[in-house]
Length: 332
Image 1 (tube, one colour):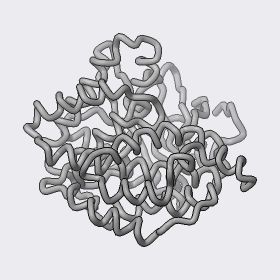
Image 2 (spheres, one colour):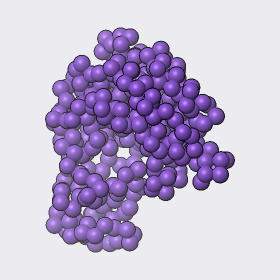
Image 3 (cartoon, rainbow, N blue to C red):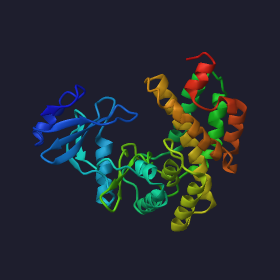
Image 4 (cartoon, rainbow, N blue to C red):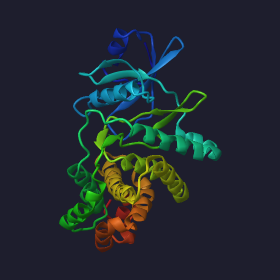
């Protein structure tokens, strides 16, 4: 086996050897915001992806279970070739390097058809009752929203009304209760949608945190993408497309904006935590975009209690890149 990096995890060679990849070359790939790492494995013209999801920080079981649930229903998730759950190794199908994000960056003319395909996939997904997944309930939504007050506010040196924050969310989250829950992939955006083959079939990744929740959540992930700008006009077009296909009305739009505000508040907290706790300094710079989405959601009437809290506790001058704000205040 040929190593291309000293970062190959211990036990990976033995795992690959035991599953017929003894002479493979291992190439590290870019990681994500978790403890998971990925490697491309090459052998005699074939290749696969090795996921390293080391316990106790990671558990590959949810990924494997959701991948199988998706493929059983004709969605394009990676085939699982081999796994060692105790050591956190999963050998899976390699979807290649063609992602929706880069395809759009390279050729803006494909923006509309690719977003239409991504929306249509969510329409198809909601036709299936969710798998055996934990509910994405109000307690979970509150816990996630609280990441903003737990991480962002201290980072920028602002003392806020934490109890009032929870109360404001409690006043609006009822609008996002899922009467008929669907499988919510939770990180459904242009960097996690692969383009497979000449037909550019959408391949799904990063769904290990899937829950059973409101169908608007994955639309928010797609149309208020933390990692790339989505034009408001495109967002409206895709919402219209989704609602035309599903018959959803005004209540759905209330849920969309409530979940948009909740998700964006959570992401701001997570990106700040990745900087403050984990030393990942590229994430604070993504926060201004997420703040812009959050402010758009807060302008919706369904968010009035939460909007009042933000106006009183985090006025516009304290919204942005937490690393820049902290440096200006001498906190970093």
